[in-house]
Image (tube, rainbow, N blue to C red; front, side, top):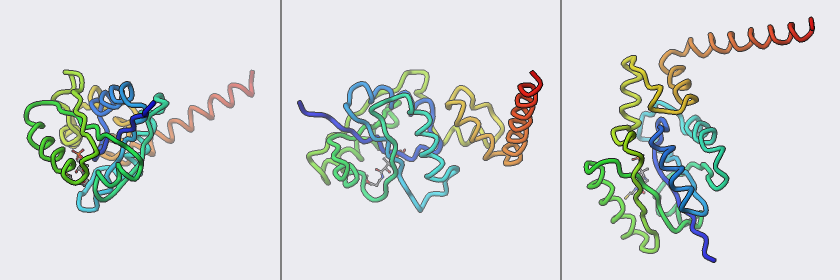
Length: 185
Ligand code: PNS
């Protein structure tokens, strides 16, 4: 039987609950799903490609048929290289449609054998985007319900690098206390 492998390309800066929702939906209909983070040297991202990959790997560790990779160049070429026959993209609202249609048709022109499959995330994520998450976080807003906790943590550290050291120190102190309690008992 033919196995369908799909690529889900994107910037994922940072990955959101909307992305995770789409990954979950994609993992149910494709045999294999490759979440592909674009290495785009022109953008000035909040997170490095390696950081985004690590977050996505942690977010998707529960899905057996999902992997996370990085790529540059054309999505269609990357998809062909990994043996994918479909590209997965999310459409949240009509406003996404024009850009997504243009991209899908261009990709079809470049590689007619590759199909673009659009899926809609759950309604509660229909307003959610990485750009808004970055903006809300930069202005001190709460992003807790918008991204997985591990991403929220990384975003907080980006906004306030000192936080990382405070949290590391707190973790180490808690570990020391647990060890000394164990020794005493
Ligand atoms: O998450 P994004 O930023 O909306 O993802 C856009 C992405 C990465 C899918 C798009 O920019 C892309 O495919 N870039 C790779 C270069 C390419 O193939 N360009 C032609 C697209 S028609």
